[in-house]
Image 1 (cartoon, protein in one colour):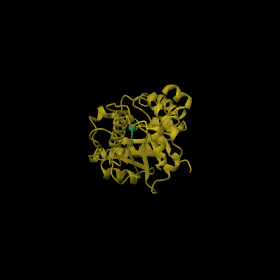
Image 2 (cartoon, helix red, strand yellow):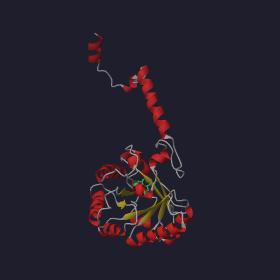
Image 3 (cartoon, helix red, strand yellow):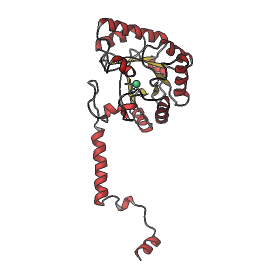
Image 4 (tube, protein in one colour):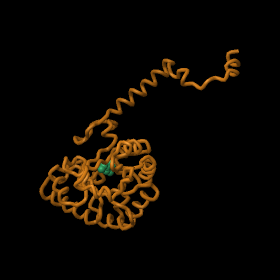
Length: 274
Ligand code: KIV
Ligand code: NA
């Protein structure tokens, strides 16, 4: 099947919905690709999903590279997008370009995503030949500035501001835009007023696509999950049951069975028994 490119995603506006999920390693990349998703995001949500951290702020460019390389090995058809971690694009345009190039050159990402209205950085990264996905609304790397994970754009003034930012990002050259944690009506307005596809998470049904964090949709994230998460499996239960069954079989002696053992050479059995 044909490789999905950033421009193919851009051209999906007004056509089929875009499906994006996160992946963190080769098996998850391979499996979500085989499931037929359009975009695989190696998101910095891996901080919580697989590294046990409280938020995304501590993720480094080296850690992102480690995961992006693994995911890129598993994905054949979907577009692989690497998330730019906190600190990797905020300091200067030059650092933003260097780090975007690392995610593509060393990591194997085919596009990068970065949070916020970073027009100069986005223009420079695109000029370097790297497709950029924008991300507006509840941007988790701004956790401390936002004062918590709160729905953004609830007042008319804030909503107008976010719409203007979305239009600036389109102008800057993003091929798609993640809208996170905003009211459905605002996501609808933005989706109608930009020519690039919007991909929503906690942003209602009117976006051109939807994204979920894989651990959330598979039932692997502990504790409370946000309202927008729909759980499609309970892999936490499945994993505990499988490992508890293995433990029981080891303790009872029923594992390994003869067919799970390499055959004993007759000479050796005779020697041991004798
Ligand atoms: O890191 C991530 O998983 C993300 C998505 C939620 C858009 O940025
Ligand atoms: Na992210």
